[in-house]
Image 1 (tube, rainbow, N blue to C red):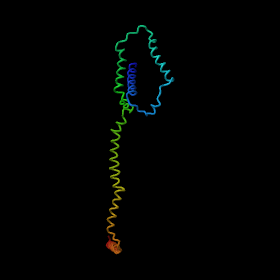
Image 2 (image 1 turned 90 degrees about the horizontal axis):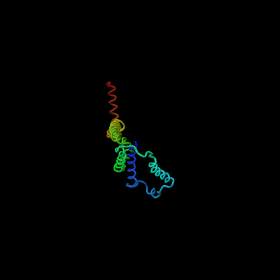
Image 3 (image 1 turned 180 degrees about the vertical axis):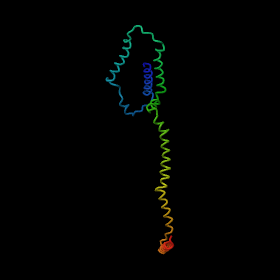
Image 4 (image 1 turned 120 degrees about the vertical axis):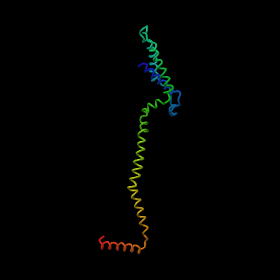
Length: 185
């Protein structure tokens, strides 16, 4: 656990140094104009922690002869710390890892681009354009409208506006009606 903590602390510290001192700031200039050193409310607890970490490490050993610890066990935290610092400085310092992890590993992005958007585009093409705007519009309002307009335009060619033409057409249909009545049609 201590070695894992050393690795993560080194990684985070290297990333923090990189983002603090080696990258252009992302904040507005007004925030930097109002920046100042921390006061005693922060300084006193930090000074207490610094002194405690230095002197308690020396005084708290207790045993004059430390027990034998294998070389790899002693160097493991050092190597993990160096590895974490190198990875944090080279690979993790740019926002790539942070962005990847913060983006929930891009599962939503992948799911949307591989499944949702193609299905949405396909359904838009088939259901909306082909069925709704195509077949149903042709069989429904648009088709009926075009059929009625075409039919009425064809009928309007027979309209001349002359009364004698209308009387002739009425006489012909009356004669046909009477002929059909007399012959049982």
